[in-house]
Image (cartoon, rainbow, N blue to C red; front, side, top):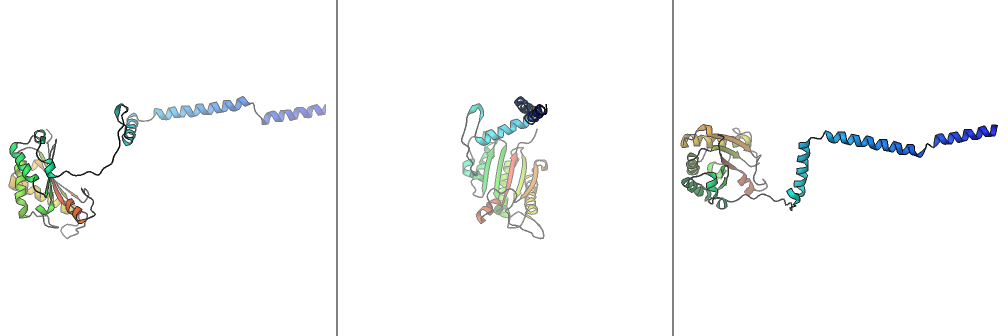
Length: 242
């Protein structure tokens, strides 16, 4: 009797330590179902617009376009067109300039210190600061008056909004009058705006002055030549909101 009892006790312990194989499979199935429903819940809370933007960004980065087409992705440094490349052509029709205005634009584009860019929105004129100002000074030079007068002829022949932007290089000025390049750039833009108002009788409502300092260089400030190109005044003409 004792031997039988002892044998039964041992068999019971073995069964407790080794559960049936189906129980392990069942536990795995429950775990997978839980993970599946967690994923469904997470996907249901994703913003659809953000998902589309993410997919679009990835496709653009990989060179994938619509309809399954692909194109090579090439990163190049932008090259500013010269005045001779821009002036003239059929762009005058798109911008709505008259023939007389186009002649004035072509005259400005012929000057080496001025870059003229015609866009569907209007016109952009980039002037080297040496035409209008002496170094570290915001008052206009007399030598710059003829150039500004030609620009006035263009401004008077249309109703575009006019934004005058002052830009400098990254060399700090730190003078008593101009603590930084920001003050110098905005002061130069304001003097150009005042000249347009006083001498061109341009409506002040069309004009605005902006100073960017050295925050928007068109070339790296790594050489005297590039720094000279970054010291500029940009006059941007754009269609006014109706």
